[in-house]
Length: 160
Image 1 (cartoon, rainbow, N blue to C red):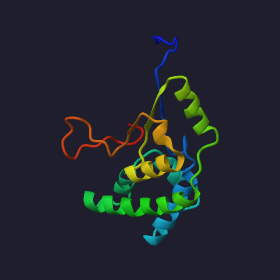
Image 2 (cartoon, rainbow, N blue to C red):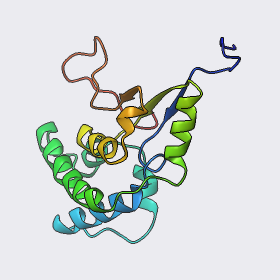
Image 3 (cartoon, helix red, strand yellow):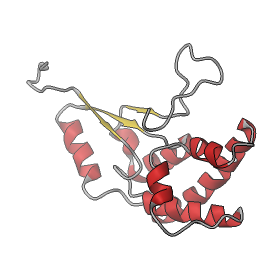
């Protein structure tokens, strides 16, 4: 289906972590530090990150701590994410070419969205650091509550 501008699509959707921002090394350091603080050193291989990529912190931690209730999982996730944000405030970089791509797409009239498993505070940090609020039209994440889903319903991270 083509649009009035002759394009096939009107909007582009982007992931945030690892797509627009080079956050994965910072997440890895934060996970390693947090797990060490919990007495669970992180094995130096890619299995942990391959199996958890794109999932929200709460989803990852619920699998690691099946005995914990939702409030405890949320507390643990907030703790871990705070370590990431401390790193990100100092060291976060945009993925090479990502901001230029967004600016070019915006100039061509595309609507732009970020679809991410990141928590709101991480999203806000990236948006502030790189001025993404001037480029991105909408954001969706697991913090969003779908209509009619009830008070506990949330969108899920990847692959959902």
